[in-house]
Amino acid sequence: MQKKIVKMIELLEKTYPSAKTELLFNTPFQLLVATILSAQTTDKTVNKITSALFERYKTPDDFAKADIEKLKNAIKGVNYYNTKAKNIKKLAEIIVNQYRGQMPETMEKLIKLPGVARKTANVVLSQGFGRAEGIVVDTHVKRLSERLELSKAKTPEKIEQDLMKIVPREKWISFPFALILHGRAICRAKQPLCNICVLRPLCPYGEKVKC
Image (cartoon, rainbow, N blue to C red; front, side, top):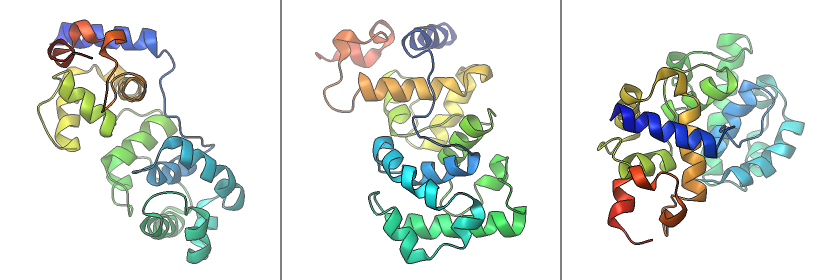
């Protein structure tokens, strides 16, 4: 498995040399907001919304003081915008009141914020602070981990634990984002492009299916 994962990383890095989040942000707090908005919504849609959102609300204090109905309206293009607006306003209030407006920088503190699970926290820590405390597991990473037989687990938390055991820590930040890009472009949920996939020689799924 170790030789396999090293080869996978090598192939993915050649294909996606600058793998990172496609969400646009200027501060770790903006990234936190954008990542929350991205749940069940494409990054492209989120980026359109946040371009105006972050002009109107620039800091945790701005979001904490925001009128909830105006905030809901500002993010109406994303799925579950009502719940997301409430969570964003509440977590902004916590950051202002408990952390004096400074973003928490640990997994333990981030996952205590409303609407923030490990996936969101890992995105913020890795892309906002350059910290490898875990591995981002979204729907693409979950699907590819199963197809590549990197994990037999079904939950994001257990898949993350499996990946952390086999992926070198110095690759914890870049590896999942390379998988995400590959999942979007090639290893799609429906009609994967196995015939042009660089990972096909290492992929049990690619050997079984005609695509």
